[in-house]
Length: 109
Image 1 (spheres, helix red, strand yellow):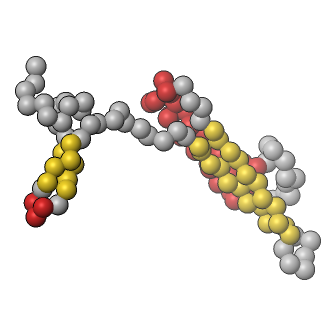
Image 2 (cartoon, helix red, strand yellow):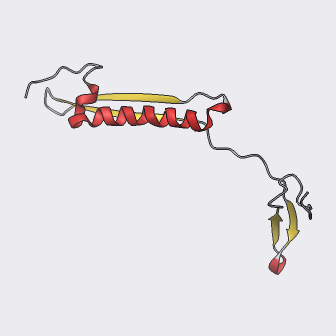
Image 3 (cartoon, rainbow, N blue to C red):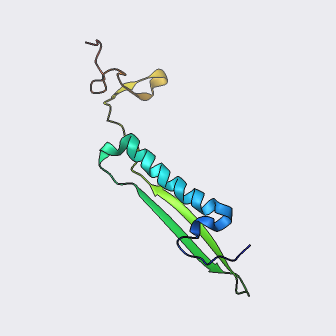
């Protein structure tokens, strides 16, 4: 096998192609999340980190590639709950499943 120079183009060839799989996987995850909930108007960020470290008493180095995806947190609309006294006198929060804005709602239109 021929030796390959480390370049942007050869990052994907590291670890028998695992570099390419990691980077493409992170890109695919960001695109998928944009497709599913991109209407939130927030950007997704893919960071590729390449770490080079010299091995002790050697001219050899280690090359580590990491691909990370930064996405907005999953968030739901707020639900209003009411604090009540539950079993054994403990305080509990209760909410109406079908009326998230009114914990006292008793009928459904």
